[in-house]
Image (cartoon, rainbow, N blue to C red):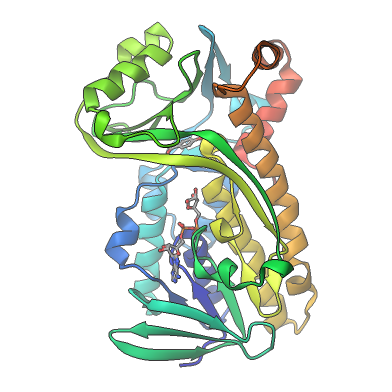
Length: 390
Ligand code: APR
Ligand code: PHB
């Protein structure tokens, strides 16, 4: 087979890139290790920046997002029995975020891809990258039991943190920056109304908690837990009891409990690989970087990378200029590092760190108190939360 751009991974990053390239008349093939049903069964992020919404609008996949997405003009931070509302709209000249699950974004992009007759190879096994240091790279895999070779001009590695793309780059060509946090998040999805119309980020002496949602009838809750937490020891009752202990009493009283339809533990990590280009191979999304989920940036960064990479490839094919692809790495990293900073800051402010001394605990309290008192500090938080410009 031959295509112009071979995209590895059918997560939001690969699918946005595929849609943007199709719009620009560039031929692309998406190659995914899992089945479509498996990809859609994963419960992931849920907050879209305005820039991400506008990418989906440009791609014409906004119908369900507009109908079902929940615009949020603010959220709350609970800290040591005090509550502070971050009024995103007034702090950012009217910007909002939209609560809409990554699963739904992926669903909409998959449907649009199928409707446009664009091909995706699902359940591609043993995907391998070849010759990406040259201008004639290729990919091999096994599909439907048959060996397959795909020749292309470029490979886009959009295959997530554990994908094959970054792993194919020689270690010596890659600089890695990493922080692994000494805790995880235990998440529950349940078909119960959310305890509040807005998100609540809660810092508590027992650990962090987050009240989020997917709709007005489906809640997503998280509590900070041990990195090796044993899921089987967390009954739904134990989870909701612990969640309520960490919220302010009013919010806790409004929590409606119900059977978990998903329950999982996620580690928290900050990670960036540099650079994002190796000859004909580009890395984008979780393949290139990870943020802890506290700032709600992972999905938005993945879509931002796809946007930058699509623009760069459009310049290459349309205007016969290599400026875009030459600058992709630096341009994307500029935005990635700011999202890394914000996600690290939110994580550091709101979690309980066992190794913290009394000094660091006082620093967290002073930081929160400053947020309460300073509109400038709240503006900086809000500016980052709604998303820095693309
Ligand atoms: N070959 C083909 N596909 C692969 C391979 C491989 N060797 N390895 C992984 N994949 C696929 C995965 O099955 C997955 O569907 O690549 C896809 C990567 O998708 P995501 O993990 O969703 O990554 P990305 O599209 O960058 O989106 C980032 O996901 O984890 C969240 O918080 C993160 O919201 C952010 C988003
Ligand atoms: C979620 O709804 O899954 C969610 C929301 C906000 C975050 C992280 C996760 O910061």
